[in-house]
Length: 612
Image 1 (tube, rainbow, N blue to C red):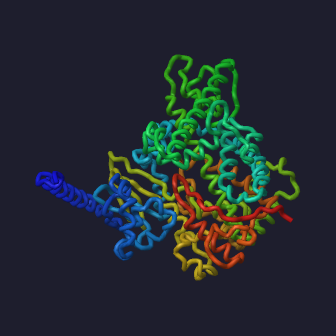
Image 2: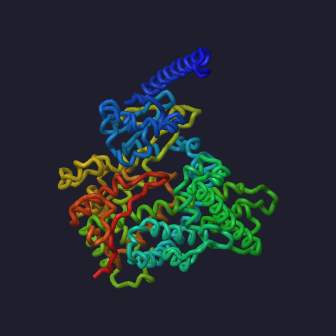
Image 3: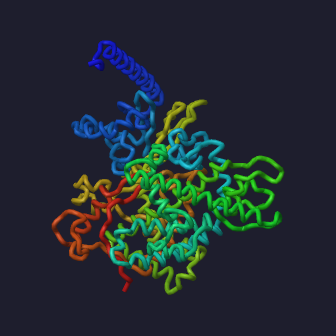
């Protein structure tokens, strides 16, 4: 009964009134700021980025979704970050503007799917990243992705020399070799149940091989055959530590690791173990490179091109004079020969090693998986792409494929079209955040000749999922817009039905370039401008070679229930290819989730066979 005492009731009442007054006052202020921009705005009850919404969302969301859609259709999708990919362009259609502000008591957030606005945001040097919202990326230490300003520029400057044409040549050849091993693994029974895992192992191997010089071809073979063992006294293999950590990333970020280790839940203990194991692996890589550096004569030059070197070497100037080697990374944690302090702290070195492990392999692992599944749903496109492979590569043995001779021809064929179309539909990130500095003058954007000043402290979200589905930039096929696939909301955003790689190949006589060049800002899987993803060429070289080697030798097809021998995975009664494709559409829509990256979480029954 003490809980119901008058004093407590009065205190709760006073707090509620004060909180309500504060919310109203700050909302009025933020609405005034929004009106001053001249942009369309939508009032939302809370900030998508605020702790109150993030903490109460699991409880409140079912209630909000139970309300009549007419009440929530304009503002509720703006609060659901993890559903941004599924919603695509729909929130912008409902609001009636391609660029608008979401105004809450907590903040003002800009949303845009306008290609012109996106380009302005990417090109404006005053705009940075909202680093205060990106601590999730810094679990091992500060990273290039999770910081902004001078610190982020330092990391970018340090690792940029790694991304040379020489590196791309090595990556292309390595991906051909690795893709050949993947092709063998895919022909094993029930390989489709591990499709994403196998793709991730290939991508992680290539990253470790060329960025950290830590793996050999034999290591990849063992990993694909699940024969790899923990090294030394490790309790997990390298790939197991990476995959387990990524599956429990938010848990590791939010919870004290000591509590995770003592948790009664096995997944919590595994998450803590994966974090500790990953940290050990990265420390061992770093220490091994330090030892190698100290054993080199001061005048030796090193031409290796690895991320680990680039991050370590800048401070170890007594030993290495190059600016694009593995040593450049480890060196950053060591003092210079003249006694000047290290360029990077140890946590910055480890943090950026992890940044490349995470960002470097997740994108390609997921994209390669989506490519394979989409081509299984589109056998005609698959056969046409294979005809391009035969035309370009002819009978050249895979060990003679090279970046210089084959990369550009492949990327300007249906191979490149399939890769680009997959990146359009399954974008790397649903949104790319930008940030107006909290101090200084507003940053202006121009829309239809009108200047709109964005106030200091504004977070701007370039919605790649919406931009990549904008009907003005990416119209749907006329033959499919009225099909039944678009009637089923469970299949949104209709990735299988919208898959149209032929759009990238221009066949008209008036086309100056035969391969489509999207207008700036309309195709942004790796962002744009001087701060675009440093690794995009690495990613494309790897994807191009992997797709080429897999589909030069193999074809992939959907399995019906009878062919699969197990009809328990998906619903439906018709045992036909059309029914299998229908289930595939659901798997590549409702079965796709965003959790640090966009990935398919349902195994899709497919079969790999040698081409005839």
